[in-house]
Length: 53
Image (cartoon, rainbow, N blue to C red):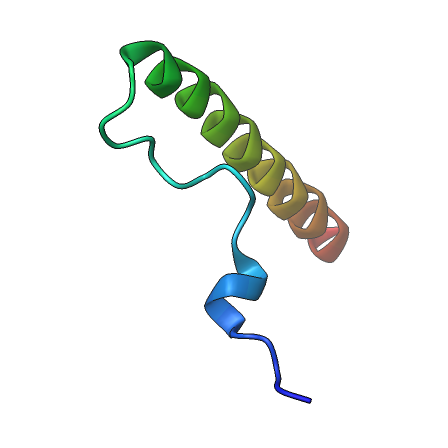
């Protein structure tokens, strides 16, 4: 049984830029990427406040 590639395991579905697609795909991609960045930021904030408390 082969171990999964770490880079493939950590990827978030849909975060690959839509190169060569219609401009509306870029808008949707930016919203989707912003959502995941905000989620990551929230997780970091929650962990940081728990550690500092």
